[in-house]
Length: 393
Image (cartoon, rainbow, N blue to C red; front, side, top):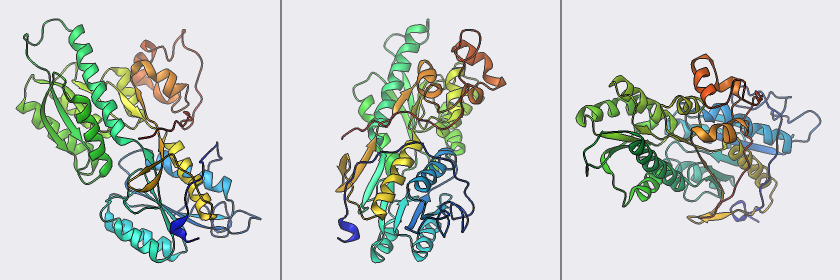
């Protein structure tokens, strides 16, 4: 069976021990996942993990350690090669070529630029290596592990509409009768397919709603600084007209909220987010950010790691969907507002109350019942362990 004919096996992952990463290889030559594999384990093969950037906290804090941890547990004789491209597509191509030259038989690739990544697919196919597209779809990949990003956009748009409606009901006075609320759409990078999918889901949610889209912007590199600059300009252009800001992720949300506060808006417009970052959870409790979409990124990384090990061993994996002809493992996201933080974030062990309720947010945590005399003791740290839910397109 050729490398590109292998397909489908159920993916089930569990908890794994943490691994200390050093340089490009997970573990030293004699350490877990190192060039010689774990002590006493026969070498099995090499897996490459290529992540795209460092501006989003999840990649280094969650995806990387969770991935390596599962490979170390499931395949002690495997070597994991790791690289982060820091948003440089040319650097990512060089990193992939280096991994293939070092004998990588499976690449797990979160592409900086999905068009430029076609060169990585060509090199991998030439050398008989398989490619698992991670988080971002790649036409021609062997497998794809991700979330349904159009559905994430739909969650964002629906939440924005609900937040604006709720605030209108709670606010006396304000707009004149018949005046429609206005929103800004601050998308992710126009070169990134997940950003385009989120934007499509957003428009689907807003279709037919009594809301005016004042302006929209595709944020280069998902940069919070660029989102801040653009939002500042739009708040000046549309004074008193911005009721909501649809931010495509939590970094952009933070930038947009900073712009709104600098403009003296109190409260800030209803603002969405996505990624479930710690700072976003704190902003939600403080009332600055309306919601986020939480993805169990450690579960996504664990799923990809389990799949990579099975593919490396020549197994024939089953998947939950087929997208663009690529066998796909989809996981379900979850919308999180202030009322959901305790159940989804704290009880799910995404972040502990100690991590969330630092001094600046103690009052907000007390109002939410996370700490104080009426709160249940729960200070357990660690990455998210929310159940993995599978959804079909």
